[in-house]
Length: 241
Image (cartoon, one colour):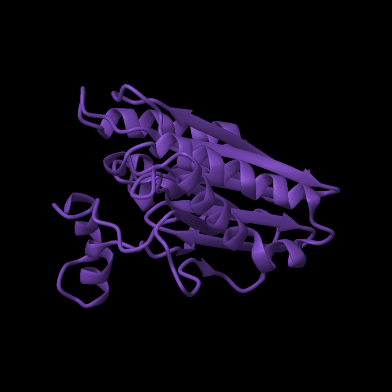
């Protein structure tokens, strides 16, 4: 049986603009995590809207492949319509990352700087690349990967849900063949910034369950965070049987 745990915390903010959730269709699961852009206003509305839209579409799709054809595009169209309805054209933006597990296959999509990490044999296999200024600088070799976390422009996003686009701006992975014990971590920047990848691996190796893994990472995020300045921080941990 698929083992998973979900966590979201206000941090030291007045409002939680993160949204996390999951849905099922038969034996298939969909996990969604969004982080509303507070600087643009109504981030909590945008994140909840996209998270709920994606989960609802998964429940209604006939197959997981059908779901992936239009799920984020439909969420984007719905969010733009909601902006108009609420007279909030320049507001309501959010990141998004979604993961499906269907039998022995996983697939994911993301936009913004909320991340998905993939672990195999308790070692980091890959992660999504942020749509942010420091990520682009790292890819260009101008800064080191580890400096993304502390870069002064780390909150400057290049892509997000709610910004109008003429062509698809999110990235969709190829179907990923699962192996027993494969693990996934979906998390907002408030979660991954204070927790290093080596700490994620170490905690996974010792954890007897997804909940135990997430509990350890939550404690590390609080331990490494700056008191009084903690951002909303949220995550979803998934471990395959």
